[in-house]
Image (cartoon, rainbow, N blue to C red; front, side):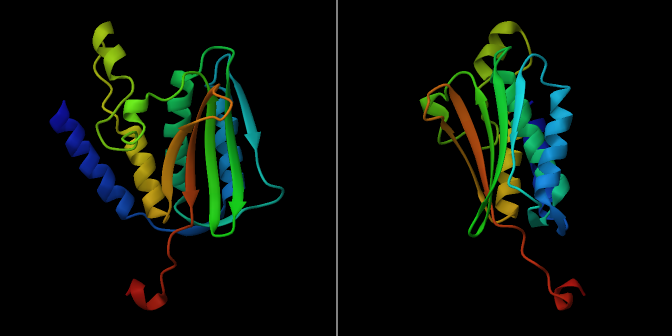
Length: 183
């Protein structure tokens, strides 16, 4: 299983590195993803906080949507029924901040510095005890790769209110290619 996960990790790295950038409205992308998540949330509340108006961005929209999917799936798996998941987008001087927060348990202190590494999962122990296949921990690694591609960083921390966690992507955008670089 580890060999398969490492092979999958390498394939994902190549696919992300070869992604093309385009101009798009990041606020519309986040709103569309949030709408799709409502059907998957069950008894969890989805909250959405967006800036007024469009948020122009230069990057790979399908990869940002994939990263959001991974963060939402992670949040949903740790949010209790009746809890909440919040997606936030904010402008910063040099880019944007995309946050997926959720109510539920706090982050294990031992994993906080390794959450976005490949083959690290907070679900491993519980899966072993239940007879399920272990979770291979590629989702948050993909999130980190997408952040890196957009000249940003991924992070996670417990909420100040101590009622859940926040996963934060700070993104600048992909570099623009000059016409001379294309040929």
